[in-house]
Image 1 (cartoon, rainbow, N blue to C red):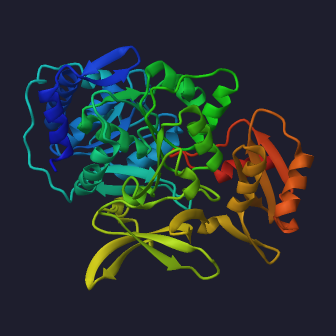
Image 2 (image 1 turned 180 degrees about the vertical axis):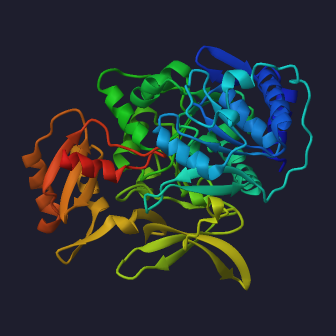
Image 3 (image 1 turned 135 degrees about the vertical axis):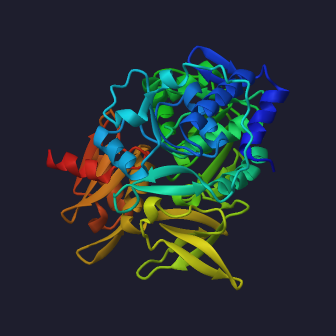
Length: 486
């Protein structure tokens, strides 16, 4: 397969008038997109060959063109969450040591002024837009750094190389089968690696990328965004479906445009799948799984209205490994479930600045050395299907009893049809339930007592309008604990 840059350039050459990006009221053609990529590429080369660039921008046309341009000239990019605290951003910049930091035009940057420019300044001169960059790409070279908090809560930058992204796209492009009739909803922040799946699978396929950069709309009214933009391909964390369910309580939305929903980042619940199929019975759903360290995601399960019940248990099956990625299931002392080990040539190349982590290891598979990553995710097998159970750090022992926190959340969801997160604080269980409506705690307790042992019943239930999340959309356990202390 051609390199992803060559695929985008080919689409621009063959379909110059096709719409590449919709950004608010703007519709940008593939010709204009690649013209902008070329102009930025020339500007970057004047700054430094193979530049290291930090991006502090929301998703949108210019940001997408910047990312493609950086990789076009053999550079590395590291995206920040634009909503993250300034100290968090500074920490990442100090570790990444960029040649350049790009900020929004209205950002009063507190970064190093000699290495920081605004997006507006970067795009000021497009005279070089017709000059293409021709360089040889190194498949082993790191092309992006995505920060993940990991199980320790300490942010670490994961290094992903060019050949890994190309290998993923070799599978993703024909599997998603996006084309000129597709509008791909780009929901995730650029700091979340789901955005990379969006940008490159879509643009390499010649489809239209719809930038969901209206934060209130994308966060609280995703169903309205699908209707308004006639989105055909949706890709996000499953929590976005909870907002769709809430949207539907006040208005009936038109989902007729949707053909495919791809979910990743957390367990996909049965009630979420059933909601989607009730709204569009001919919909296809991809349930995918994989940590940032594994390069995007590494397993998938295709679901439709006829087969999804075959793959439903506490949550939906995570499916089988995609070509190029391999799974090994290792026994863990004290657990019935097994830990997922990802191995092969296309996982991450460790952490930035070679921060040591015992989770990256070398395995001997069929007498050959191969790189692996221990995910810390526990799964169980049922009828030949794999199901996510919990993190190793989500199974706890209280007063001698071993408790799976995700089991409690499953039972709460089963009764209330609402998302919940159960935590342990000072050896006591507490459950946070995401809803703006009241619920009957007495009835919930009665239900839980019929299916859970007494020691698994939470001491308290707390109603929260929104479960707090980190910049990578993972649940912020520390923030929940702080709520208990308020």
